[in-house]
Length: 376
Image (tube, rainbow, N blue to C red; front, top):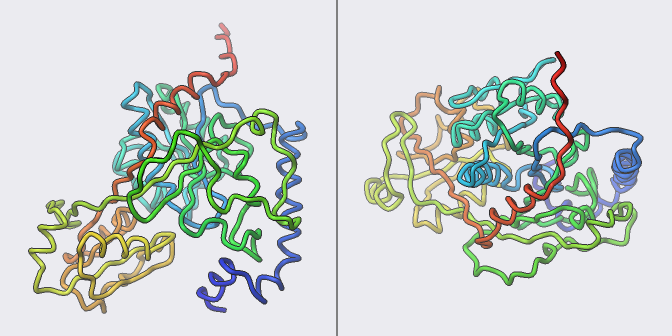
C-alpha cells in the first residue's frame, strides 16, 4: 500500500478510510477514557515544581514543532528565564534512565530533533519516553532550570502542563478522523482545549486582529470519532490564541567547514551548476517550495521519510554539484563526507508581536505547587 494513497485518504477520505473507521472508533474510546482518567483523578499526573509548556500536535508526524521549541527557548531566555527541554528522543533506545546533555549532542544517543534543539539553543535537554522521568532528571541535573518546554507530548498527560501549544500546517486536520482512518492522534475538538494554535503557513502574512480565533478546520465533526468530553470551565470560557508562523530562508552554511553564504551569494556561486535539495522532515515539499520561493533553481529534490537515519547516504546518485539540506538533517549527515552539502536554517517568524510577552504573563499567573521543605 503506497504512502501516497494513505496521504490522499487521510486528507480527503475514501474507501480505505471508510474501511478503517471501526478501528478509529476504538482509538476514540481509548483517547476519551485516557483523558477522563486524568480529569477525574483515576490517574495522577506529575506536577513539576516549575512551569511546563507543551508544544505538540494532533496530526501525526511533523508539522513544525521544533522551530517553535527553539524560538520559545530563545524568547524565554531573553525575558529572564532559564529554560530546559524534555523530549521523547524518537528512534533512540534510551533505557531505564533519561539521557541528559546540552550543546553538541549525538543524534544517535538523543535523537535528531533533541540534538538540533540543543545545538541551536544551548539549553539543557533530557530525553526519555516517560516525560515525568525526563522532567525529574532534567531538574536534578540542572536545578537552575525554571521553566520546562516539552518537545511534543501533547498526548502524554502524565506530565501536568501550564500551557499547551498546538502546531499545525496547511494539512489542517485532514479528513477529521482518528488513526488509522485519518491522520489524527486526537479528535479535532481537542483544539478547543489548548491555549495556543500556531499555523505553520507557507508565506508571510499580515498580522491578524487582536481577537483570537480557532484555526480553520478546528470545527467539531458530528461523528463519534471527532468528539471528546466537555472542556473544562476555564477552557470553555476562552478561545485559543491564534498565531501564524512562517519560515524565512536567508542564508546557508557548508556542512564540511561552516562557511556561510547568503542564499543570493550561493545562487550566484553555483549559477552554472546543478542544485538539488533533500529533506527528511514531516513535510519535505514545504522546504523545497520555500527554497524555490527564495530563488533557488532546484534541478532535483530528494524527499525522505521523517527522522531518516542516514545510515547510508541517499546522495550518491543525486546528479548535483550542490545539495541543500535542513538543520534537522544536518545533525545526522556529518559523517557522510559529502562536500556538496550545505545547510539552510529556517528562521521562524510570528504574526503576533505580543505572543511571547503574553506567554510570560501566563507563566507568571500559573499556580505552582509548594516546594518540599528541607529535612535535616
